[in-house]
Image: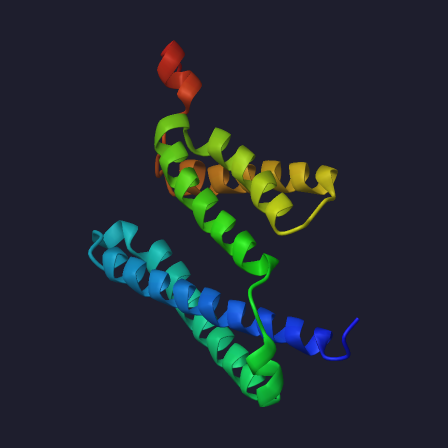
Length: 165
């Protein structure tokens, strides 16, 4: 292995992080502008979450830029494309599919499928933990939105097919 291989990999990771942080920052900003148009009762949660996302994205971007600048110039010049870009593109594609799937198949089915898919894409392989995490996330989301806030979640595919409420 080349002695600078680790530094070069770190450089690829930092460039990937800068791109991902910038994308996340822009997405959070655009969604926050949209959320600010919501009616009074439904504005608090999305604005709070998106504000946190905006702040965290800024911190992530600043951290990645600082670490990238700390690398020697020759390492920066040697850094190339990596597996990280394919993973990032896959995550973006899965996110787009999820948005469409929620409207077609419903929140729970789509979420129960997307959480394991995303976990596998990022390299997590503890399948029992993935399954339990997906179930817990769906249960907590249902409790918060449907029971506590009384906000309806998108209808499930089976409820539309069989007329079940």
